[in-house]
Every structure is written in C-alpha cells, then in structure tokens.
Length: 279
Image 1: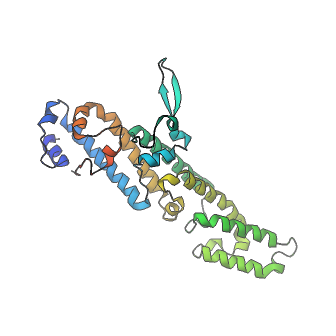
Image 2: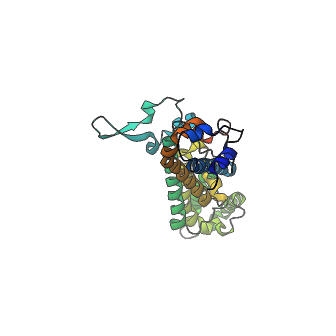
Image 3: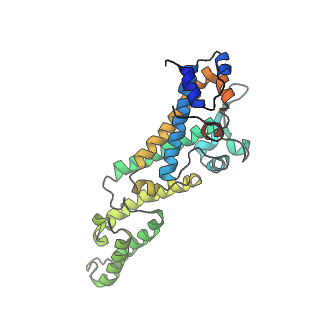
C-alpha cells in the first residue's frame, strides 16, 4: 500500500486530522485494511437485509429474544480457579445491554449451522421435491389434512371409485394451492411422496419458529432458491467479524479514536454513528 494515510483520509472523510492516528505508532496500513473489512461486513449485512428482510446485526431487544436458543444463551467463562463454567446470559444481562461482537458471532454461528443442516437435509433426503417452488408455512396444515382425507377415501378393493367426487374436490383445492407444481398432480397418485416431503417442511417451520425474533421466512428463502446465497453471506459476515476480532490488537488505540467498540456492535454497523466510505 503506497500511501495508507491518504487512503485512510478518504475512508474516514470529513477532513479528519490524521496526526493523532500517526502518533499512536500503530500501522496505518493495517488500520485501513481493518476499516475496509468493517465496510465489507456492513455491505454483507445490508445484502441479507435487502434480499430477505433479515437484519443480522441484531438489536439488544432481538438478542434477548434469541436467548431462548441454548447455543446462544450459554457461554463459557473461566472462574478464579481457572476452571471453565457455563453462564446463562438470561441471568446476567438486562434487556438494554448492548450486543457484543462475541454475542453476534454466537448468533451468526448458530444461524449458519441451522441453515447448513436444512440445506443438507434438502440435498440428501429430498433430491427432487415436488412442492419446493410454491410451499408456504401456512399450507402445511391444510396439505396434511388433504392427505389424511385421501387416505380415508381410498378403499382396499375399490380404490377411489366410490368417493371420486370428494377426491376430485380435494385435488382441485390442492392444485389451486400449487398450480405450478406439475409433478405433484394428481394427488391421488403422489400423496405418499407429498406426505414424506411434508416432514421437511415441518422442520422448516420449526426453524422459522426458532428464529422468529429475526423474522426468518425460510419458505420464502427456499422458494427464491436463495438458501445457498443466504448461508454463504451469513458465513461471510461471521468470518469478517472474526477477522476484525483477530486484527484489532494491532490498531486498538486508533479504533478507540474512531469510536469502534467490540462491546457494542452498533459501533461496527451503525453508519450514522461512525461513517466510513467504501474506498
């Protein structure tokens, strides 16, 4: 980097005096790279928000709601005897406590793990799902009931012959819900495959419930064929945060001057609080 001071001036903008940064003796080139990673992290967060209306830079209130997830709630600390003990954040933090970078990393790590698990189930257990392009969470119950009715209407010897009118009504309703899912029709032939597929959608519904605090609609993500992109961007955001943690020591005094605090993620993500230009 030929002139890190000039680049830093562009990133910080507003004609900021850079002499105090030089006086710390900390490497300005590393500070530039650090702030560029902050900008990348902000852009990744914005991409997730723009595409799926999910803000991964969770507020203190949202984080408190996520503490119902054990992997986020429990952290390990060393006591005076240097022994590791598990601590519940529910019992140690208040609703208004800021979300730390460590807290946010726990959220990103668990969310990524859940997305990866769902994607693995989809790829390995349901390679050719029938309803994937149109499924919605509110339709799991009605489709389950439709399949239950089809089972009851099927006679061992006569098949659907004696209940053909009722069967056609069910199939017409089903086709209205999934008009583009051609392979799923007629339901009288496909219901065993649809029934098995519903197990996957029930797991998706469970994940939506688990992450309702951030407004996840996994069915929309899947309908938009966005599962891989969402997972990769969550991973990217987590990797960038860990990179910031790893690199902060060499530029701590400069970060203090800028106002970036790892005890409050708002200082990392809030552009109104700390403006950084993408240079």
